[in-house]
Image (cartoon, rainbow, N blue to C red; front, side, top):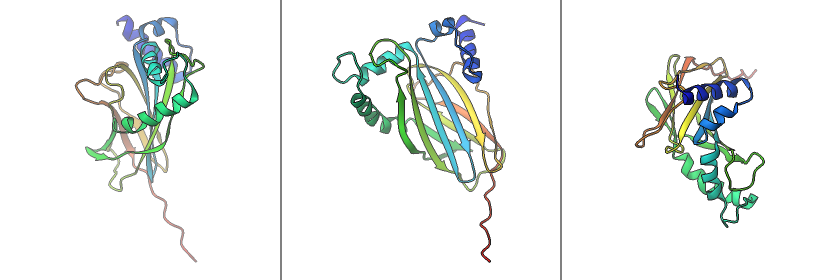
Length: 210
């Protein structure tokens, strides 16, 4: 296994179980963006939450984009303007398909950003969280495959982790990607985050009126 692959797998394990991330992993992953994709399914809604962690190189690039007056410091007003401009663009870069059928995602909350204690434009880390939802299709059946199409920051190397949560009797599982740890989006192609609905959610019957 290569050093970069080992570092990526170490980072995945650390993120999943809350262990400290080693300096070696940081050194290798300075030009990566971590994509943590969570799908929550219930009888009425599919919720998609994407946490992006930008490591040194890409965090520095985005910090310069945030710093509108180029004075080296990022203010709250500059952050808000950055997010306001970015939100509509990002919504076009995330898609969802159920058994091949595209379902239009809707922004659930405004994007949230955390500069992790550093408000300067130098190399650092920061996190960006995106929230979307769509109504659960009435045609959803057990065994259906749900795919989240991720075209966010396609030029950046990506480290992707998936999480699934089912409600209302739903059993939802993640599907192992073909290239765990390193997932790229090339030539406009999306990173495919796959989930399987092992058991479809059940809508509760409306209470009878006496």
